Image (tube, rainbow, N blue to C red):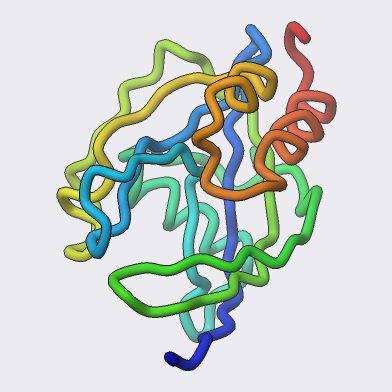
Length: 156
């Protein structure tokens, strides 16, 4: 039985004026082909603030560069147990929201090595559609999306 690593994490929920949230289509390298939709974000590096980590993760995972002033939050804090490459983790996840147009170009050119080949795509989702699909990376994600949509605005 492995040791569970606790890590501080910053998550970003970009919200479109149409009321959808940009998510990433991913897989755990230890379980290729088992796909899920997750929020943008990851571990806070030593010396980084939550906001700095959120901005960095957004750029690494989507190629989107944004002004830290665009972030709202954190809106929600949640423990997220997960496994990655055979190791157990629990994220102390802090969720931020930001406005973003659906016409934005998403690029995976800046992924870190372990994410390359495991972040497979992106898509705009409503919380209800994600719940119906049943492939959310974590149980709190649809509610976090609803909160982000409420705070940023957009169609319901």
